[in-house]
Amino acid sequence: MGSSPTEAGGAPVAMTGWVTLGNGEVRELASLGSRLGARILDWILVSVVIGVLAVIGIAGAIASGDEAGFIALVFGLALMVLVITLLYEMTMIALRGQTVGKMMVGAKVVRATDGEIPGWGKSIGRWLILVAPSLIPIGGFILTLLVYLSPTFDNRRQGWHDKAVATVVVKA
Image 1 (cartoon, helix red, strand yellow):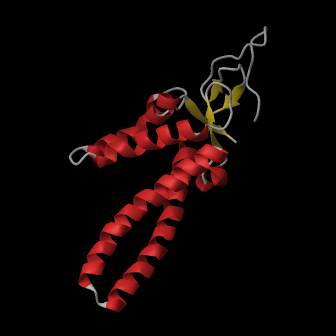
Image 2 (cartoon, helix red, strand yellow; image 1 turned 90 degrees about the horizontal axis):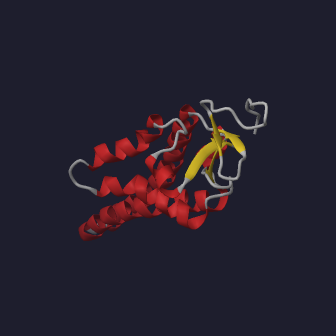
Image 3 (cartoon, one colour; image 1 turned 90 degrees about the vertical axis):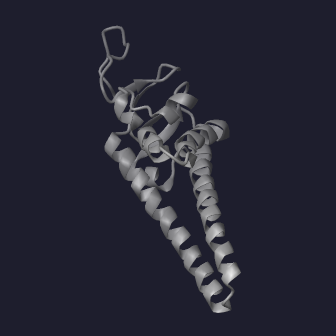
């Protein structure tokens, strides 16, 4: 945790890098760099898992010589990417408030009201807001990029996905 400056009456002084939760607790925010680092580490981890599964599936399809099976495999891999990222991100945030990447950089997602782990509803909401724009055929990439960049537009470093479900990312 750490401490922040306080006024004579014990009230926290507003300063960049700190947030006062709804219960009055003052927590240090995770830096934008640590959030980016956590995201990159998570992408690497998920990519390795998906890559291993893809190689196994492709090797099996090639060995069988079944062209229709290979085409089905490609669609199956796309679905697998969606399912693995969904399960990884949502489950880790819902149950721990941290993905493996966030654990490695010392960041944690908490409810803005009380500093507790977000739970399933908020975790699902955060994930949907991060992923939904990418499903839009034209311009979806730009919207997704804006969602990922949105913490840079806010003094509490809350992305749109955090604001929508009332979470903040703090130092663990």
